[in-house]
Every structure is written in C-alpha cells, then in structure tokens.
Length: 352
Image (cartoon, rainbow, N blue to C red):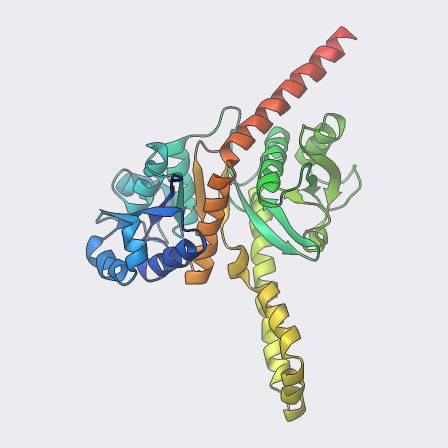
C-alpha cells in the first residue's frame, strides 16, 4: 500500500478557523484519498467538527494546543508567546520533525513566515524566502513571486527567486524550461531600479539551467501571461496581488449591477448565463488560493485568511501537489545546478 502524504494543519488560523479548515480538509481528501492529516488546535472545538466527517477523522491525528496566533499579532509578539506551543508553530514543527510532509495555515502571514523561517531555516545560499502563488492569466496560469515575504531584494536574491520560481513552474505547470521575466517599470534594459537591472544582466549573461530568461515585463504582462514566472520583490508583488484581487471584485460588482439594472438586462443575463458563469469561475480567487513559502527547508503553504472551505481546500491541494511532485528536491537541484554553472562561467572567464 502506497504511503500517505501527511499535511499538518493550523486549524485555529485565519478569519474562520476550524469551521473552514476541517470541511476543507474533507473536500481535499475526497480529491486525494492518499492524504492524511496532523491537526493542531483546541480539541474541545475541533473534536465535534471532526466527528461530522468520519472519513476525515479516520486519517487524522488531533493535537491539542491552547494557544492560537491572532491575525493582528506582530511577528515578534507571535514568536514570543506562540513559539513551541501554538497551533501555528506546532504545525510547522511537524514538518521539521518529519511527522508531516507539508504545513498549511490561513493565519497571520508575518507570524507564519517568521515562525517558518525560525523553525525550518532557509536553504543553503538562500537569504530571503519568497511567497509564490499561481496567477490566472489569459494564457492559463503563471507563477508570481515574491508576494510579500519580505520587502526589498538585491540582484542575487532576485536571481534565486527566478530559479526557485522556475522549479515550481516545472512541478505545477509541467513546463520543461519555463520563461521567466523580471517585473519592471519598462521593458528597456536602462529602466528600473539598479538591483532589477543588475539581476536582468545576470540572468541575461548567464541564464541558470532549467529556465528561459525573457527579460523585463510590466504590470499588464502578468495578466496577459507573457511569461510563465514573474519575479519581483515582496513590496511590489503584494501590491500587485491586492490590486488584482480588488479589480476582480470590482468587475464582478459592475457585472452584477449591470445585469440587474433593467428588465431587459435581466432577460439578457438569462440567455448569457453560461458565459457569465464561465467568467465568474475564471475570476474566482478560491481556485488559485495558496502561496508557497519557497527557500525554506520544508513546505509551508499560506491560505488567504478569509478563504472559505473551497478556497482553503485549494491550498491543501497545492501542498499535496508540492509534496507529490517532490518540489523540495527539484529546487535544491536547480540551485545546485545554477551554482555550478556560475562557477564554471567564472572559471572559463579566468582561463581566457
């Protein structure tokens, strides 16, 4: 019998906590019967909810903890009172101890990143982890990183993100040599911040193995799907993400208002309902919920704090895919190959 893929869940995290996390786990289990769960949180709250899902209960181990990280806690506060005893920390620690293959939380992003970095540590050579997520585009899907793990990044960090993002694209998008672009204020090589121009030079002159460097891309290229992987530092990436989420809600609001304005608009909606349903499905953020923390010695996935069960299940599905496709090994191999290629390039230059 094939071994189970075990996911550790911070059941107390997010805006809705266990009322969303457990139904989400049950949904994901239906799609992936080889899943099992380590669930961390307040047993008195979790046990009645778990008993409603016998199939989920049969493959789950419940771990009681009294402490839950609040959504408004500062990362330093969370580390001070929640380290080693909170549902968030224990779910991450399960990955470190080998009790789980990945951890999923909808909790406070800053606290989750601080705890994950403190507990799992970064991979060799990686100074800053990045949050990477799937982004719906006109061509299908792309991967965008960093979406807010840290503010600012030097040229070397941007190159490392390109390597890690490309490794994730090979796993999730099944593309052999994903195209990678650096987000910039223009496509010309003379534009943008010095760190972005320097990263572009490094990627252009010595492209890492396993990716195809496209060049600079602008904000509108993200939605177009111009490249498979868009790389930026966390401040710009988070603004881009929140802007896209707000625009999707704005468009949905416009459509609802327009379709209910007159009796003829309502009749037109009936005839065009299939098309509007397809558009709603495409704009549904739940389908691509989940950001992967890349650059750590373990897989941690961040769900949107306000996600419902379907959205949180998508984050669990993403964690499952990352484990199933051996993302960690592929990132390490990609970083090693890039390091070797850089050394060979320097050696060749010296020989010349």
